[in-house]
Amino acid sequence: EIVLTQSPATLSLSPGERATLSCRASQSVSGSYLAWYQQKPGQAPRLLIYGPSSRATGIPDRFSGSGSGTDFTLTISRLEPEDSAVYYCQQYGGSLWTFGQGTKVEIK
Amino acid sequence: EVQLVESGGGLVQPGGSLRLSCAAYGFTVSSNHMSWVRQAPGKGLEWVSVFYSGGTTYYADSVRGRFTISRDNSKNTLFLQMNNLRTEDTSVFYCARGSPVFSWGQGTLVTVSS
Image 1 (cartoon, rainbow over the protein chains, first blue to last red):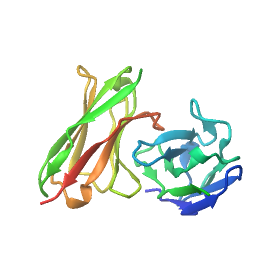
Image 2: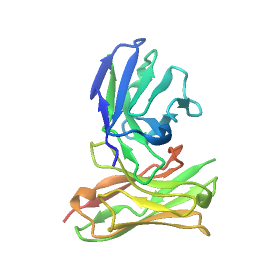
Image 3: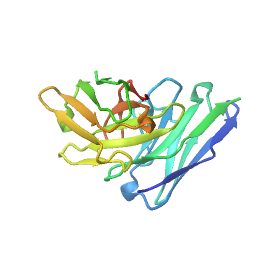
Image 4: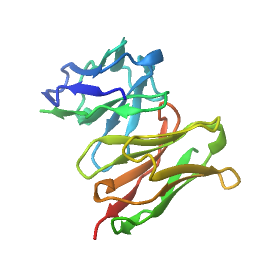
């Protein structure tokens, strides 16, 4: 099983600042099948990024993904108040999918 | 419009069984990779099972042997049969479409408690 470790656990930033979220895998993620989701309280998750740098439909271009192998990054270039949420990385496509434990982004 | 509607959640005693359903609208279940993801109260997301469009199924270690994923093509519906439920299975269960997951249901709460 591929274990995904996200850091930091919590990120507290001001609007307009840049957020950098990390996701490290215990072994190489094949085919770069790595995705990022945003989840707000009381809501289902929403796909942001997959593959690992393609934006899902309707996702603003301030969200970007990068990385390969075992190290992946989600960047929010200019934080907006509505970006306050928990962000999860996920590896998919094989026989065992896994999620990271999440990074909570707080907007000051 | 793509829509996933889960049902079947509720309160069950430890050792009991439940069957979750996910009715799909706007697309064909059998042509898509479909999965179940759960979230315990106040916790993160946990992948449970996937039913690939080709018919292959896989399970998380925590549920293998207790849960069974299936689909009814005539009803365009995905199911999750959950047996021998444990208190730690208490979660909101989401039905999900795609790999990665492009569409999510609203979730159904399963509470395992005596």
